[in-house]
Length: 218
Ligand SMILES: Nc1ncnc2c1ncn2[C@@H]1O[C@H](COP(=O)(O)OP(=O)(O)O)[C@@H](O)[C@H]1O
Ligand SMILES: [Mg+2]
Image (cartoon, rainbow, N blue to C red; front, side, top):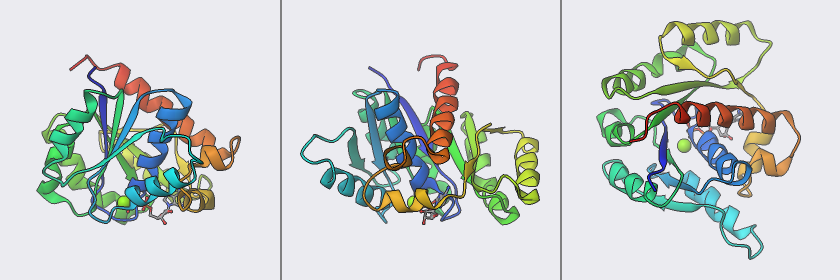
């Protein structure tokens, strides 16, 4: 088996990398029934904390995905090893990676770049876009914490399109439930099955899976 590797990256901290990595992984594992692994390359280890809380709340039923950690330079090796045994590997990355982030991008089949709807966040994305282009990797920019009604959201969404990278059709709203569910190791789909937040994540995951399917096998 050679699974697909999704790297969630963005130089700016707090853009939603860890939140999206966890949610994409759960949507792949539980909603799409794919054998899923997550790889945390952020020394802060937030995704690991979430995974441990998830295990604790699983009430004895085994974990629904594999969890590993790696250093930035070890990301490529570890992700490729996981891809031998999984359909999907989701890599979470630290902020301010610079060139250290290259292995996680080099190994990706798709680079997912969360961006908050602010010009400052958009500027912070430029080095990630350049590195992704340099490696000739497909990427998907995702507007996260978006307020659909704010004019700025529309302006940033337009700016994303003009950057010449692909912007996801699905925007992820600014919703408290994204923050509150993470503490007990859950996803919004598990906290509020039919809510808007869950719908956004499932739609985004659908876009991601479609984008991966369009690619030739490695
Ligand atoms: N769509 C969202 N709506 C509300 N809060 C969010 C959303 N995405 C992320 N957050 C919150 O923003 C903060 C930073 O998110 P996080 O995923 O840790 O970002 P990063 O990993 O890029 O540093 C966290 O407190 C998280 O709960
Ligand atoms: Mg993080």
